[in-house]
Image (tube, rainbow, N blue to C red; front, side, top):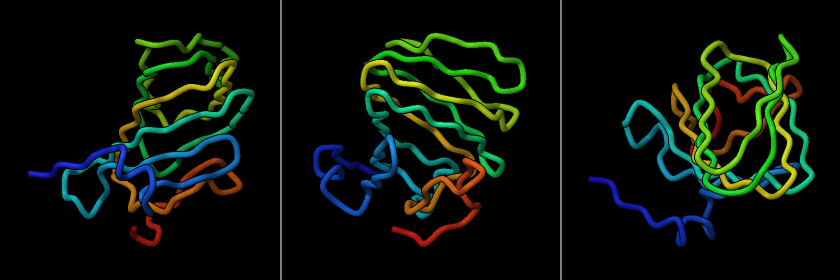
Length: 130
């Protein structure tokens, strides 16, 4: 059994800070679950263009407000508490936060813990473990 406390993890190497966001990685590849689980905060006013070429991701909005734009179609979806989106086709997207958003994120394959977005908006397939 794995038990972790977000309130402890937020002040550890499990927290990653980057432009427009920070993420607390609660489950990682080394945990052997087959996915990773993160609580990610998107800072108010952030506009992040991303495409996870190496991972599939699902995201559930816990708090805040924003939108996600599908770069292939131009379609924009509102993000608010209770909304989930899944990037099931490695979708290039733009995530915008009107109010700071706290998101629960699941990645498959799991990340190792130190990943940040590269110049294409993706995470590398493998990074240095936490």
